[in-house]
Image (cartoon, rainbow, N blue to C red; front, side):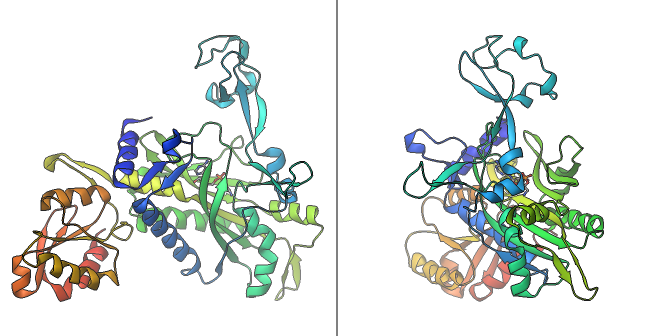
Amino acid sequence: MDNSIEKIVSLCKRRGFIFQSSEIYGGFSAVYDYGPLGVELKNKISQIWWKEMTQNHENIVGLDSGILMHPKIWEASGHAGAFNDPLVDCKQCKARYRSDEFSDEPESNDWINTQCPKCGTTGNLTEPRQFNLMFKTHIGPVEESGMEAFLRPETAQGIYVNYQLIQGAMRLKIPFGIAQIGKAFRNEIVARNFIFRTREFEQMEMQYFVKPGNDDETMKQWKEERFRFYHERLGINKDQLRFHEHDKNELAHYAKEAWDIEYKFPFGWSEIEGVHNRTDFDLKRHQEFSGKNLSYFDQPNNERFLPYIIETSAGLNRMLLTVLVNAYWEDEENNRIVMRLHPELAPVKAVVCPLVKKDGLPEKTQKIMNMLKANFKVLYDQQGSIGKRYYRQDEAGTPFGITVDHQSLENDTVTIRQRDSQQQDRVSIDSITEKINDLTKRWSD
Ligand code: GAP
């Protein structure tokens, strides 16, 4: 693991963003729990995405479908057959690897003469074998006679199988979109790089239904729009973002064209979101497997067709990791670590501190807390020197520090400290909210 990711992992634990799952039992690999600051940050990111999709676009509506669905859905989608990773086992030490870890062309690799990275023996690796990434479970009290079911590996299928109901209920006309945020599960073999690749994660997917023939143009528009989102809405540095187009060997079984939005993580350029032209592949397959006509009736033109689908598919956890990596800053001049989170995203908007624990300052501070609580997530802190209190919050990404001192008792003013510049301004208590809103708006200028 790269050094800087290790630093972020350590900060996340120290400040209550993210913990290894089941830590007191020695940990549970590739699953993470989001602590008090992590859940706030994750919620903020998903709310921004949700608003961007369903509020800023009047033709995009939301859905929350089940994680468990009819098993036939996965046959139709191709995941039961094609959602596989070729794996290689070591007969000596039982280690298991993805075959592409050894070679870009595993089909032609000489496995007999390949060394096992774990035990170092040669001649013990098997030929690659297919391994399905879906988690299996059983519905019903008796495992043997129960129905086999799968935890969904993507949220998209819930949208496809509900699309006609939603279109009818909401009287949607093409083009329209359906957005969904929810958990997805994949039995990843090589789970690594902290929350980048995990076995349980959240997706934020939007499926946009268009008339066949309009798909290429729509694809272009969504590519641009999604790229802009990272820079404009999450404050991600543009130079650290790029597109990667899938060549024929990389394309998923459902896609005609696919682009990844990649971020330059400390471990290299890696995908954070995919924009895919899935054509009518999924609807055609569900029509075939369910026996239901899934065509759309275009009234003005009096014609029926299966819509094409442009998908934007983002991982919420990867987006959060992007935000964390992008924000991490070692301010050597002042010997502090700062999470320069966009104030719109910061888990806590302001820490509110009495300068000292006496002279009526805590009581005055509490009153200010109660006033601010209605608009912002604020935190009270009276432990330690004021400098230490600020530095703790710098690591947590809290953009503002409000200090109540003896002057506050005399003229109802406080100081507001800005996290990144450490600039402090004295403002009247009545204008704290306005000042915070103003600084938040101007943050990215
Ligand atoms: N519906 C299309 C689809 O699922 P994908 O490229 O397999 O496409 C989309 O996944 C996004 O989901 C990825 O860009 C990534 O952000 C996220 N994702 C996929 N697998 C993940 C994993 N194991 N851990 C965390 N995020 C993952």
